[in-house]
Length: 465
Image 1: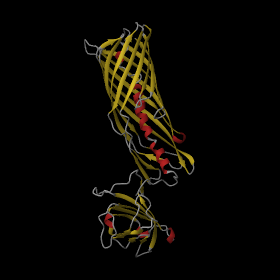
Image 2 (image 1 turned 45 degrees about the vertical axis):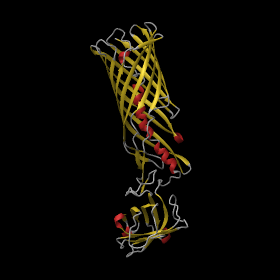
Image 3 (image 1 turned 90 degrees about the vertical axis):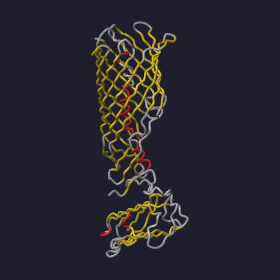
Image 4 (image 1 turned 90 degrees about the horizontal axis):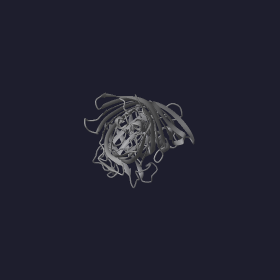
């Protein structure tokens, strides 16, 4: 049984009617009595209604109770609320937000158990064990709110938990690596590029993205693909690519993710119109290597983890024809909706004094984009496109980060972080025809603070055949 469980909030009592209910952690040690008995109890009480009591009763302000006894012979075992027979209390003017032991008004709690052959009473200063046997005793050494408990050896628990929370960056990497090509080299449908009089094209692209205002992230990808007209007004393409993200973490830690992806797209233009409807899908498989730095006994230690990330994306986009023109630019709106599923496999760190184990994470991110492109054709070789789009994320908080330290004694459950729901992105595209069958495209984007890269860019070469 795990003796310790961490949480950043005081646990609420089971009975919702207890407005001031909280859980307290009691610890007893037999060291002063010449034995190694150890007792950990979780005692729930309503601090708003607690009162001095006497007699055979379990007061209403007692909301829960559990206890684990070790190194105490026949008394060893786990005890629950049903094992209690009586609860006494004597005290006044206590501050229950901090350690209770040692406060002037604390005269103690006494818990009497049903089976007195094992445990006689948990008294205000000590616990009497094996009443009919060895008569072991253990002193009460702590009575405090049941807050976070650190693994053995952790000096700065807040710092250790902060380093653990950094592992949420692994999940974020899966989202970033999926979105870079989707909204970089593929931020326009294939049909929006000059077909150069042929029914097939080969392309090679390179993407990059960088963020520094909220987080320090650098991501790159490259791919090769081919598309072909498969039916009247219908175009299909497929590509394979490779992406990488590097990110610095606290205390000289790092998060490096690299892998491959496959991308496919189908575009359709209804007969007799300039509308374009496109459907794009992508699957990426990434290998993450995480070097987590944390403080340990006054120095910096490192634990290393490695895991797999799978991301699956689908995007539906509709591009309208030019609706009006101003100053030689034709303005055409577009809208898209995308879903990205990211799965981070469970993994366990190695090395360092305080490694941890992490459970699997899974989450679906959904977003919509609404924008407009302003296009100007200078001549048969050069075309300029300026775009602006609003981006909205529909999903709420990301997946929780759960796991435990390597000993299995300290569990953690850290809530997922909610994405910034809205941002605006500006873009510039230049299409330049290098030859009759060769097209160069260069694009650059900048965004307000959001869940996309602060700045990004893409370069592609497209050859018709």
